[in-house]
Image (cartoon, rainbow over the protein chains, first blue to last red):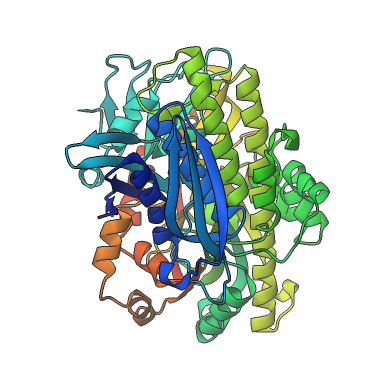
Length: 137
Length: 475
């Protein structure tokens, strides 16, 4: 499983899983777009690169998710291929493939307003890496 | 928690808390919150420096992030902080209620037509873009002048501004404090409803509780009115996000220990605090311009559908209130007036009769308070009281408050045709996606009547009228 939702009254709580940190970050990007749009309608036509830095895993994840949200909210880009995520010390670089949002072809489920710091956690469990994030919707 | 009286519950000051917490609720409403973290969040807010008297929660309280939704907290101007999480991402999310001369009998046969017209002509839904393409200069004017900018452009009249909290423009807005990303996101979204819980709802006055106040407000049984619920769109979200990122670092530098990172804050009397308040005011003004434009287009559509002039339709803004905001207000603290920074995170200002900031029309009645419920249940119009002024920093609740998590609502909504169910009750709903309808379906929120009862019994607002929905558009 790449991610699942946990119940929260107002917003969207997401638990994200990965065998490695890079996979965790790749699945986090998948989760964002999977929650926002019908991913099978998005084609890998062009590439967008984002970068983020952080002071801790949690800080890095939030900054990374902020950049991901901005891809759609600020630039109108929908990603569908999240395989190229690399981590180097305190920095993450991701090259996503996807296409520009087109209201005639794409289907948006919901708007994610922002990623919050509330109960944010990133850690290594016996079954692999796990992150807990709450999105304001 | 200790019960103080029928409607008040005390969270005693413990550990690092700098004040106690008080929750306005009933046993039944509190039970619905068991298992969520909202009560803990009320206590968490009481950890913030410079909090005055207590951390409060209104009866529509539920689990948020940082502050609970329904949270109210006031801070001392010198020793206190301002927290972007205590305002929320949707800065100046709020409601306005526009009255008409139309009656239920006139609207009922044309309600589908009206809802369709509103849905087709007012941009709504995820990723919707406005009709305007603002230049940077125009956008900066919006950020400074708010609803006044919209009126100057022809979206409404001067009288609308009198009936808007703060006249539709907060002072001290400084567009220089807004990031390029926020400006970029704001440019295309002015004049859009948004998605999620934002809506435009056609309602009818069903019951009057206070004839005198209703008379002054201009509310009569069977009258049709329109409730608009929207906020500052992506611009506001970005302002909050940018400010939080800065304040998380700032809090580390200050060495402040907080129970939740989302409570990141800065002293009000510091460059970081002032920068946030100046940026927040810009987003608040954007939201007021936005609601002003949404109302203008609503008016245009009503005129078209009913083929009547504005004069015949008697369309008038009753009031516009924000429910996600931090404001500098002068309020009584232990009998003495003091300027405070009041955070309302899902709470409405409720000024008492006689207050200097009220327009002359409402000077005798107290401020109109607008409390919408979920899609099936309509809204209350209430009025501010002296008790709210003395006790809750002139604040009251902002809605019914969510009951079910979104995941639970989606599960419960599976296999149900919520739109059809509502249509069977005579409520016509149009929305961009079925996901929104499910997440926002009736039953996803607390019982609005129970919430309004606690508010009235606690005396922090007075019931004036109850409205029922006829039709609604959702993003």
